[in-house]
Length: 364
Ligand SMILES: [Zn+2]
View 1: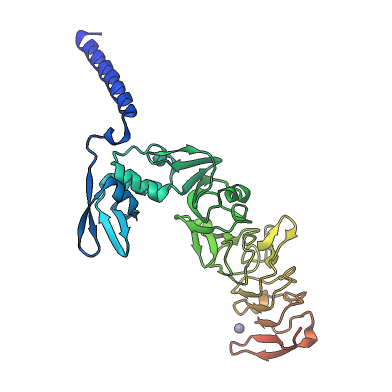
View 2 (view 1 turned 90 degrees about the vertical axis):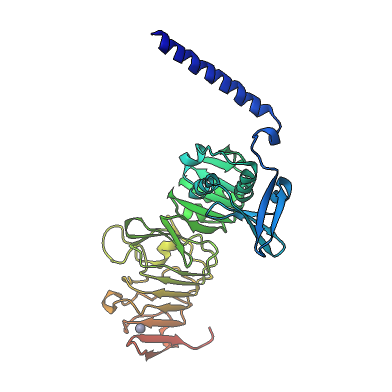
């Protein structure tokens, strides 16, 4: 090793030691002194055009979020205020919103104390979950933590069971693209669900947009669900929906074509766990827009009163498709010669679309 190289090595070591001492010293200083460039006051621009100088403490008391652009938002009475945050705050917010684990855990941005306080104000009530581990933003960084109560759970990856999710008492579940969502995450909970990119939550239906679309689950609190034109419906997908009243489906069962080993043609498939069916008593109305209707397609739907199958090709409807439904009062079917329980109590007429309508007018 030459003299020059040796000198460089010692300089590097010295720098490292000094940096270490300095860093350690900084850690033991009281909070306000830690960063020399902290501001004493912040000029907040209000929605009425006025500008006020706020101390750190008064600014913290007025915090009302962070905009997508990274501006700190305030609220005082009916007034909304803003303080231009830096590029670093915008970046930090984006990382916490994105919920990808590695960027969150390695996030190291030079934020000032008001920016950190604004982030904490927004994200303190959010827990991140990834494959059995829980994380949270602690005011400085995102770090591993234990499970606790939280307003929002961000499900970033792996699998999450409802029994575990319930312990957080979360009201909102955000589902990231690496999360493997199924009914087992939601069954027995009452969370509202928000998807990032992969999972699309609309009209009570949660669709995994990969592979042509799969109905993965229904939102637990949904009373009316419209399932869009997906390729597959997962078994038990609607089990979480214990107060479901009306349902519109692209087909009944697991898929649109009544063939193949994996096909299940009963509505109850969407409410089944193993061999058991748990169709809620609240479910009164079903609209079917296509696919095929096998015999006893509505088996084990104890309270179903209305079925509209207008969109189904009559040749794809088996004669006994609507049979076995003691509560049925209204049926709109493209195939006319179907069998019904209590058939004698129904009157029929032909609708404008050409379908046959069966209607029961008696009181029970
Ligand atoms: Zn019709």
